[in-house]
Every structure is written in structure tokens, then in C-alpha cells.
Length: 120
Image (cartoon, rainbow, N blue to C red; front, side, top):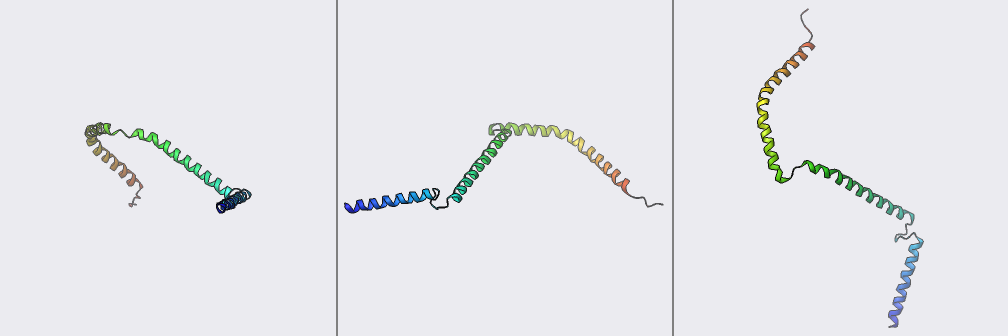
């Protein structure tokens, strides 16, 4: 019994000495004092910035989900797009040949006016 109490007393004094040493060195186990406090402050600052970045990205991406239709409405959306495509084909069949002709005439005028004439 006496040996146990001596052991406990010795470990208690060792623990007290360690705590006083920690207090002397700035409260850190490594004994770095100022440097380790700065490291802790920097790591806390980094954590804060990463958390701010996470919330910034999360809240800026949240409104983008409004542009994606729900699954139950997706078939209606696809049907509407198909109908618009079918209705637009009538106009595009007329428009594309005319646009091709207009484009070729425009390019022809552009390139023919920039050529030097060889007849002199």
C-alpha cells in the first residue's frame, strides 16, 4: 500500500512539473512558444478561409440548380423541344440555301475586290 501511494505521489509531482514547464514555454508541448502559436493561428486562419470558400461555392452553385428541371418535368421539356425543332425545320429549309448564297456572294465580293488586276 505504501509503495502505491509513493508511486502516485511521484507521478503527480511529475505531471505538475510538466504543466509548469508547459506554462513557461507558452503552453505547448513542443516548447516552441511564439512559433507554435503563430502556426496554430495560421492553421486556424486557413481553416476559416477554406470554410468561407466552401460556403461561397455552395451558395453560388445553389441557384444554378433552378435551371435544371426536375425529373418528372424532363419528359415534358424534351417533348416541347422536339416540337420546336419540327416547327423550325420548315423555316430552316428555306433559310439555309438563301444564307449560303448570301455568304458566298459576300465572300466573293470581298476576295474579288482585293485581287490586283494583271491587265495593264
